Structures are given as C-alpha cells and as structure tokens.
Length: 163
Image 1 (cartoon, one colour):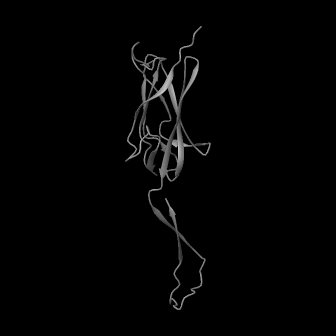
Image 2 (image 1 turned 90 degrees about the vertical axis):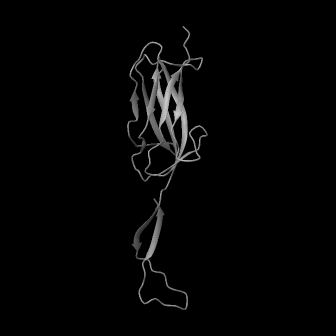
C-alpha cells in the first residue's frame, strides 16, 4: 500500500516585534514577552492544506543547547474536526519559557502523529534578549583607592546583570 506523504507546515507566523521574522529564521523578542503566535496546518503530498476532518494533536517543544526547556501556555493543541474538505489549522499563542528571565538562543519545534507518520516542523530559531539591567545586592569586596583622593564614606561595590 502506498503511504501518502503528509507534511506539518507553517501557515502563518506572528510578529517578532520589529525587523525580525520567523520566515527569515531570526525571530528576536525580549524576556517576559510571549513567543509570537505560530499557526500550523497539515498539507498533502501536493502541498494542499488538508486533513481538517481528523482529530489531530500538535505538540510544541522549546529547547536550548540540546535540552528541553519548560514552557508556560498550552504546549499541546487539538483541532476541532470539520468537514471532509476542511483544512487543519492550529494556532499556538501565549507560549514562553516557564522561567520568564531565561534568555539566549532557543529552538521551537512542533510535532504530530498522523496516519501512522510522525510529522515535525523543523526547529524555528528564536532569540530571547534581556529586557533591562538589574542591580544585584552589594558585595562586601572593597577595593583600595589607588588615587590621591580618599572617600569619607565607603561606597558598596555594585554588580550589574542583564535581566
């Protein structure tokens, strides 16, 4: 029996807040913001949207440096089956790392199981940048002043990190 080739396809990609995009593979957002909406569908061997009449679950997975990152939001979505000629379309929105301060380069991958086939949409690269500076608690390390001036009061050293 011939197995028809189905494909999980990117239908629409949400705004990546600026001059970056999912399509160009350089989506960049700031920490604490939702990952831009991604809408997926199934296509048949001719690339025609299809399969809306079947109940299908699609899973989203976020990885960083090869490890899975816990996410907030609905990471598994089910379609509502429609008529025989309907097309499957599922939108993922409101996703993000469970740890809202987590930053760096990530990959977002979607997968499903349909008619005996595991279908996946290759990783969409995503960069999450820090959205500000935070002053960390003062440390007790005091450096001697090598200059000709002396301070009447010792100022604590400040540590700054991107957050």
